[in-house]
Amino acid sequence: MLDIKKVPFSRYGSFITISQNHHETGDDSLYIRNIRNGDNDFGAVFRIELITESGTVPYAASLTPSVLRLNAEFGFAEFCITERKVLQIRSKGVGVRLTGITGVYDYAVKVEQNRWEVNHSSQEIRYMLTTITGNMTVEAPFKEQRCEKIVVDFLPDSSVSEMDCAIEEFTTIYAHRSYLLFSEGQNRVQAEFDYWYANTLEMPERYRDGRLLASYITWSCVVPPEGMLTRPAMYMSKNWMTNIWSWDHCFNAIALAKKSPELAWDQFMIFFDLQDVSGVLPDFVNNRYALWNFTKPPIHGWTLRKLMEKTDHVTLEKLQEVYEPLVKWTNWWIQFQDTDCDGIPQYNHGNDSGWDNSTIFHKGTPVESPDLASFLVIQMDVLADVAEKLNKDVEAARWRQRSQEMLTRMISHFWKGNRFIALKSGTHEPIHSNSLVVYMPLILGKRLPDEIVNQLVMDIKYKGFLTDHGLATELPSSPYYRNDGYWRGPIWAPTTMLLVDGLLSAGERELALDIAERFCEMATNAGMAENFDAMTGESLRDPAFTWTSSVFLMLGDLLKEAF
Image 1 (cartoon, rainbow, N blue to C red):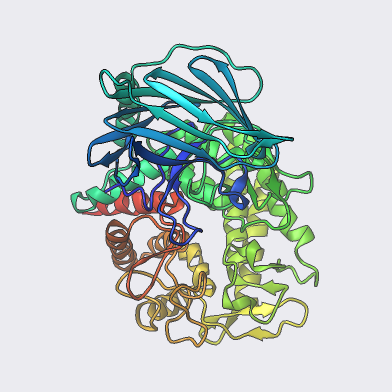
Image 2: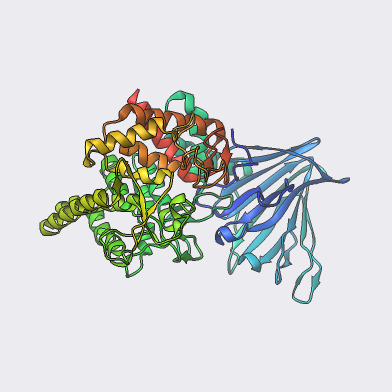
């Protein structure tokens, strides 16, 4: 069920990761990685090989939440991240070779008889390599400013043919430590995962394999507060999407709300911790930096409403914490993203919408799109609810009024004949597109007139968006449709979740549950990928994604409650 070819080996609270490099075609090697530098850097530190006296030997990998095991003909090696900065390795019958992926100033130096330090300056991290049982040989010839190569062999003790070693991350001064027995560390990690799994949303039994995979991906993708990260943070993936984006985090927060409400609140608030004085949220963040060139759509009011529905943990104190940031975020769209001053905010780039290359942007930007206005209608309404709870009655009334005004303006602006359309900002030239994005006003549910809801539902049912596997993001009959076209065809988890919720709000329960079932069936079979081929259901892009896992768990939970 856990396939190291698709799913990285890691654990909750650690930046240490072992995986293949999916960007290097034909390279099946496994690498120990440091994933602190965002998705621009794979972060390879050491390539892993198994060795005997005759040289390197092939192996087959098996993966559980607590241990990565490499099986060779005459032995095995096992890897366990026993503590968040400690990777322990044990082997029997074979040795383990680590070949450094070195940069301009990287070097290795002997510290003690059984201990070497590797200063991996290109990854801005140091490693202490220690043998517990067995022997270590290091080949690290130094030339001018760096070691030309760093090759470390951990070799079994000749008397028992076994080896135990540890690899520890540190940044400044190494603190000597004792180590857990490998088996003890493994048991602790497995117990941690078992607790997480027990507190994962429940689903129908037929999705059991998918639930295990989704639980492992979400658990193992949490990294600790460090650098820019103010709270424990669930990365989107530990493959290569090693950031958090400012709408992705919302789905992860909602999926955690029932069973892990404090961690859910951390996921929701982490971007508000970084909010600019203007009110805008960064596009993404990792422990090193935040990117401000783009942002993501304002689904945070919708998210807050879901959190309040799912847990009592959202107290008045927490509402006080988020109220002003949510006000600033809402006003930013109105104040700074409406250059033609028509009261309808715009997207200046596809990335700002989350639908990066949607066909509503194929004539350029800025674009006024009905999804953005719809999200703001909800966000203003939620602000009214929160203001009432905080005894801000005048503000609550004003937010309620602004929400209704935006709803009225949105329908008048975008509903043309029998469909919503997107428009070029300024000229209001219609943009002819068959993107699913113009159906996102369904998130408003009963706040839309019945005739609009009925038409949108009919289109989803019969126009062609609904495939055997779920909702395609571009109509399959469109000339712009591509099987692997990112937002021009593939099925995505977040849009599925938003539309399922909108359909439920509109009273279209049967269709909502049908879409949820199709998605859960697909993800159970294909894995928790970044997106999926709408025609075949096959996984596309990053094969181990947390927001897909979270949506899968939420939809499965919905199906369990429904039946």
